[in-house]
Image (tube, rainbow over all chains, first blue to last red; front, side, top):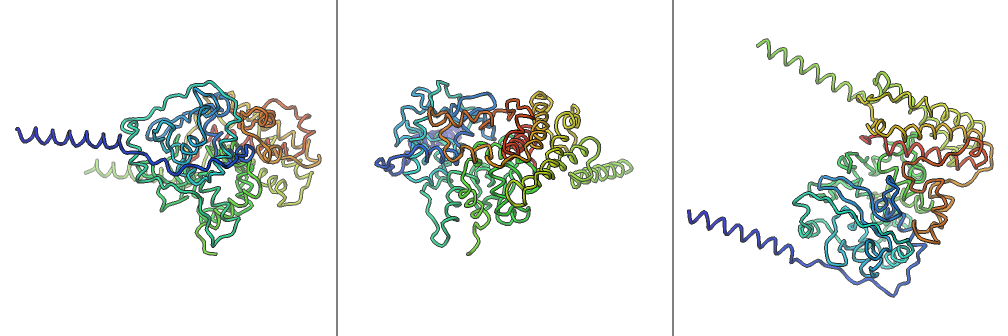
Length: 299
Length: 205
């Protein structure tokens, strides 16, 4: 009997030690961003469109103000709501420094040191350059403040234990700026940046494992498990070629939301076109198409 | 023994029926669901041909645009909504139940499609230019949404519904639409298709 009690006590102490370790495990805020760069709000506004900020952080369906907080996103881990990122000092990000902003967007760490849930796709935004975040920061300074408090996240236990995210980060988060492939042309690399960085296409078009991490070996193979129960199609070079999505079709699709068959993109992709890709230049849409169709192919 | 045989055959028949319906997802659909799948196919055909002309892949032919726009018009409005009787969600239907819980929006979008189809027919011969949505009009110099001066353009673009709520745009008469560049009106048509699909069609691929 004494032995059993001793075993349980040991397990309890070990468990507590793990929890304490998780809480104490420091988060790496990464190198400081270059604060000497002057951000351009027009470039930042364009980048914000490419990054999909407006789409997630605005509750259009309920007449929400721009960037004042998004609608609920139901996932297997709970219901997420993108917070208020207007310049409101109390409810938004009005009192954030450039450094705060850069760390939040590229490292997924809040100014008070808490890790964000990867529902915020910082694992993609990590590719943004220092100039990119300066531009974005400058653009966000122009957003009208809205005093709408952030709705609380509704995450199921045990995912609600935020320090647990540090494990997720250790397993799945690979911080790092975008590095062009020198063996590829400028257009391909621009597409690679847009797709793998701000566009974060893989967030929906790559399957995820049970912990919500991307299954990188099946990159762009589509997902059966999107929020709300929808599915996303594969967008590998083979899948695109098979269903008639050549370069022109991709550009038209992303600009106008029309498929090669004359169908209209629905589900979340319709919103992606409406709020994000329809704002991109022809050059950028072409670059995305070139990258998607030639990803991995030897030149 | 008899019971087992019966259950086995019953199971086999049911499994076969299930496989049959799922394999023949779109073709083989019967009744009202089959009708509306064909209805959508015809709309898609028209949009496909219109897209080719507006994207510069085929020579622009105002007469053809007029004809195709009339097809769009004829497939909108009450013709569309009549294909969605309450509860007609049997497979292979991709219609979401929100159609009936939010019938007002669904109906408004169908009517919008009809109006815009008529509008494009009227506008087909106008001088070309100006795709709506982000591209073309303000996409290049658009400021942050919600930004004060920079966003004036974007918010003023409200009639196009930059990130519109349900996608239901303010009422335009077919005559007013008939004054616009045809590209603009076509963009409004594709946005209507997309708005409806985003809200009311399940994406099961």
